[in-house]
Amino acid sequence: MQPMTAAPARAVSPPPAAPVRRRVFAPLEPISASARTLLGLGFFVLFVVVWGIATLGGFVSPTFLASPITMVKEGWLLFTEYGFIGDIGMTVWRVFGGFLLAAVIAVPLGVAMGTWKTVEAFFEPFVSFCRYLPASAFIPLLILWAGLGEMQKLLVIFIGSFFQIVLMVAVTVGGARRDLVEAAYTLGANSRGIVARVLIPGAAPGIAETLRLVLGWAWTYVIVAELIGSSSGIGHMITDSQALLNTGQIIFGIIVIGVIGLLSDFAFKAMNRRLFAWAAL
Image (cartoon, rainbow, N blue to C red; front, side):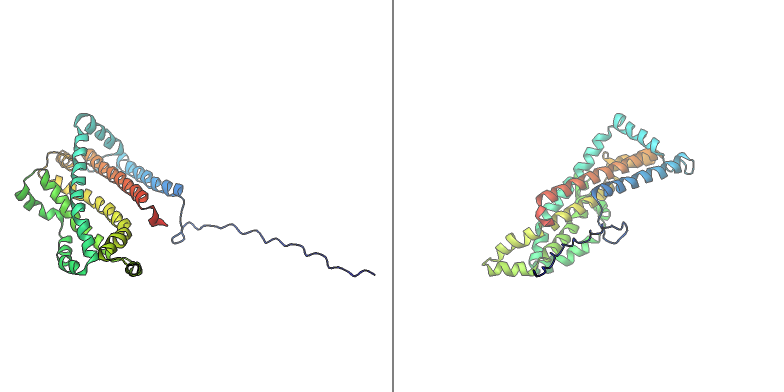
């Protein structure tokens, strides 16, 4: 009689994994890029629809708010008959000119304040004080000092951007990881090497993000500068349109500012992703 052998054990396959169901309104739940684009465009569409219903439906007087159709017609006239492209060019030049002037001086000062506490103790109280002063308050003085030319407008943007950049860069540099600094010292780095190879590279993505944010603020300062004593620029066009009660041109000028600002923001983001791709790892 042959001994009985145990039957081979049958492999049991694990049960199929249940599909992961994403909750749309769960906190911090990510969404796809296509969904983000559709949602963003959807709000603009909804905004224009509500605007059209309010104006074309007669709920709001055209004197106070032009309809989307009227705004488009007035915008076409601005480009074809009033040389609005020149106004756009002047405004863009003022924004980037004043912003670059501020960034060239503010970034090194912010790095120094974030690196050396003695420098921070010397500059930080004054910079913090000036940060709360509205740039528009300096316009009367700047007109006396620099006249009504381009320098006055550049200085308004410079004042509005400079102190913000200094403090934000100082905070970014000062927040460097202490373990990285100590590791660099252990490997033989000196003070100059710490700044050049640890602090600045580590803070570079944050500094770039700071510049992107402050560039958006610079667009608000340029319009303030152009509202007084200016003969060109988008702000000058808006002031002239206000005198004529032409709300279509006013709204078109505001939208142009938003579009240019949005394009510059996207360009800044793309540049930051290319320059600091390692920061997202």
